Image (cartoon, rainbow, N blue to C red; front, top):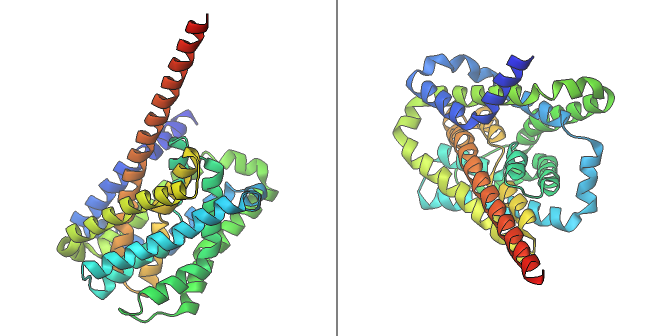
Length: 326
């Protein structure tokens, strides 16, 4: 068990680097992951099921105990990221399949690892969880509508088909995970240690499958899409933080909104792209899966270090005042 814990800890800690490694292998040797392409939807369902197993009914109560904070964070998420995605697709004149992929990333709910990043950054984790839950629950309705509205200039889509897809790969697995947590709590407590490892492995396979299926297209347009993904993500962080600051949130709350806005459920974007638009449309989601874990980890460490420095300075000042009074 100790060996397993060490392996799980290693894989979780170095997730970003491992996902990047898998992407490189799939790009250079596409045959190594093409077999996983037909399992992408199931892999995402596994990730969502694991997420559901970590949730309890009281987590949903947070949405109603802090309605203003949750509303502002969720509204920022579903306005900033879709608008940025549409603007970037237009500005760079992307071909239809790539434009759809970028916009899908923008219209999806918050990323599954945003809560972890918020925790590492010493942000308001409760608010982060509440916003993540809200955007995920709203996704079956908002994601298809926003995608339909924004990609209409490029391709036609079926609202009903997208709604059913999101319901199947997000809502049902999460609901099942919550039910399992509710009635089999002891089992879940033991399984919780395994969940991060399973989720990371599933995400790695999703990235490998998408990259292998679109290797040639990535080689042709890779630098452009990577640049767009980075701009989208960083602008999401900045505008999310700005929106929270304008709303009068304190620093921990700003950190929560920052990560909930800037980090997307790129696994869902990838799955929807493969199901409805083809492998090329899944490229932005796959690249985002790699990049946002790198940027999120770096940003969380920077914010945590700044918080520690501020606390240390505050302690030093307090100590100085005590000495003077003495």
